[in-house]
Image (tube, rainbow, N blue to C red; front, top):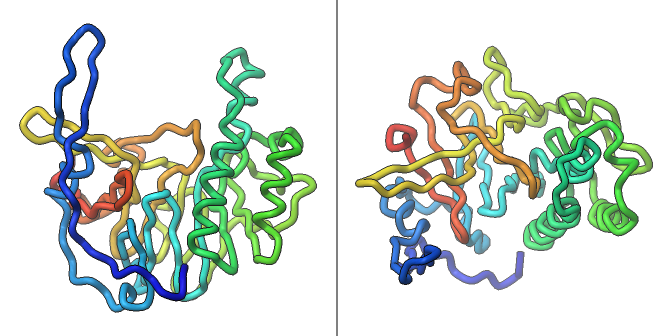
Length: 279
């Protein structure tokens, strides 16, 4: 963050997005970001915005702790100058290739470049990776030299914590950082898989939440932070990761009916959408 931040503005400039359909003339469709902006819940600008330009973000409090959700897919916790990220799934492409599903082997570096961009933006003192950072137990050993060097550079000079996940239950090999099954800091509990009977303050990943808006035949589906006042489930950060609709049975029991929000990731902004408006 710069010392002289640009003032934050809530306004969104309307624009049209061209869409070319094979065999048809070019048509104009309503831009996805404008579509989400029309339905977002506007909240008063918190004092946090007076201290820095958190462009593209949305503030959400979990168990009384103010968190900044960024459109890149990470959470920034200002109190601890900490970045939280979930489900990197490094080396997923290589893992699938070994099973005969051939995909371009560029997902690891794409994911790490995105992560570096986020860390360069927020300059955190610590990073917590909320599990499934590696797609399988051998993924950390398969990391190409370029990827390993990139990770080591990001880890240098800051605290780095790997939370274990179902894909990576063992500590990564030949990489620094601390390893925990879960971590409790202040009023938050950091773990990989959300627990239906867990205490308030849970931040987790695992489910790769996505949300869908539908109005008058128009549909937008984006990854999101699924968030209430007691828990938040982060979107997956990895380049080759899919997602589950927040109304999938896997989310049953995690939120009180539709009393939560989907903080949907636009191209340059996070949009707070009430669950009652989702489909």
